[in-house]
Length: 293
Image 1 (cartoon, rainbow, N blue to C red):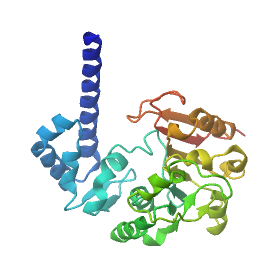
Image 2 (cartoon, one colour):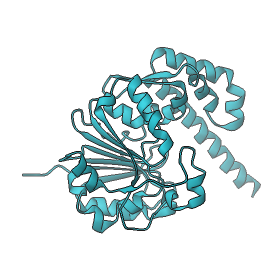
Image 3 (tube, rainbow, N blue to C red):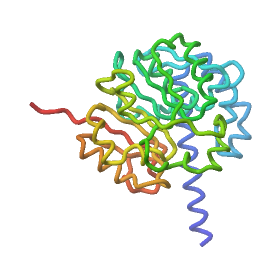
């Protein structure tokens, strides 16, 4: 028993080490030189804490005061103020939403459901997309507007404070839990209205969504109900989402997307392909298969 426990601990240690090494490489590749050097200095100073906790947060803190700058997949630059950098290593350096080859459609439409503080929204806008950003927590709106203004792309973005879902249907996910909603960092006690994807298409005269990004804390199982999603999924070219298996069945989502002509990949948190029903399923990526004439 002790040998098995020790073996499991060694495997976790090696997995954490490999993840840390990959993160260092990704920061050096994506962060601009000054930002990368500050992060490395923070890593060096925080090495004891990094080793103790198994987390690189001590290095990330080096970005909190001065902010940081990152190179986008298209070669442009995104600048973040210090208080927006907490998710930058995941969003930009690990590239978690685009790492299977999905692309931001320059000149096309991106719909960002669960925009949070706006890191993906500003990335898409800097890359040249037109963006509809939907965020349920009301307090994030001024933060999103601030980062858009810093990058001078506010004219490319439409901001909606709303729940992304299906009006008239029971809430699913974190938003359905009163206690979790009340404890959310930027929410007010009263939930905002629900907005459906077809309403966004109508409101902004969107013919096709080039990329639909979702991080809506379990509400993906609400939004992608088969009977309601069938009306708009054919108008989506690519889809990327964080999945939350505690609120629904990921294989059902993958099957629904496959029925609508998407090639689907599910990965764990480190980007390794896994079965849709695997315990480690964390992200789902889908792209419309080419139509043969």
